[in-house]
Length: 299
Ligand code: CP
Ligand code: NVA
Image (cartoon, rainbow, N blue to C red; front, side, top):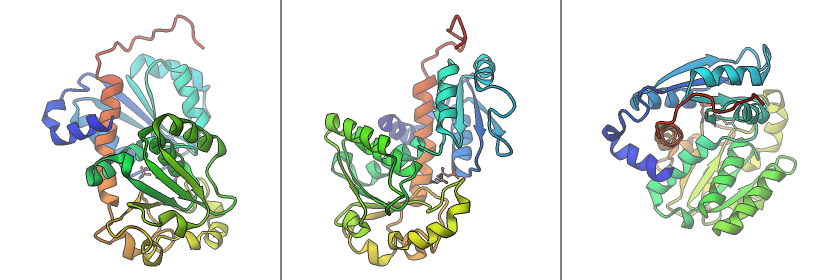
């Protein structure tokens, strides 16, 4: 996927018709700037079309059963892109619909972001197996997808989170299991200084994710030792880059001096979303498969 993303970035003209005649639909239960616009721009640049359904006023399955929605959508569209609170909504859609379903962020994972992040690191440093990435802050959806992606790529990742805000145990177990096959090195820590020591990249994200706004005050008391600032960054390698999925809360998880530094790659990451997602959709839909449902009976 990363290889295709790089090719699509360097030779966009070769892929202008990759999704010709294909239609994608997005349902978002949470706000978005980057994800929505990069899917829209990406599909347009591949000759496809895309619809956006603003689902922020109510959960996707509030009006009718998820399986009924899935069996409608599969008759009309070639792929479904979902941003949801419950990860089970995405899994349910993938189970019921016979067209590909892409996770555009759930409470549990944000895989499109992690692919874009590793594309950014590959462009910057080359061999991803040698990259040492430290994620410091909340053990959230972004941390989970970085862990799983690093594990699949055979890369080296450390995450440091405060007590009580660690990564999901099942995700960590899955990452370690994958790492046994790929040779990835994973360290789960609590000390942010230990995590960043000598690394090539420091990554952080919001202390309170979408849907956790009511916890922001409590988290603001717990997370300050995990702020990515000049003092913490001094422990990384001199060439280390600074990463954030955005939106950033400047002065909270990251200081202006870091996010605006010449070593910040946050806008490279945002650009990479476009190329990574174009590759995802092209791999899922570019093979010319029919969208006629293949099931004889509905689940
Ligand atoms: N990083 C990211 O997913 O941004 P949006 O929430 O703006 O889509
Ligand atoms: N962890 C953040 C990521 C935003 C792109 C959230 O879920 O709000």
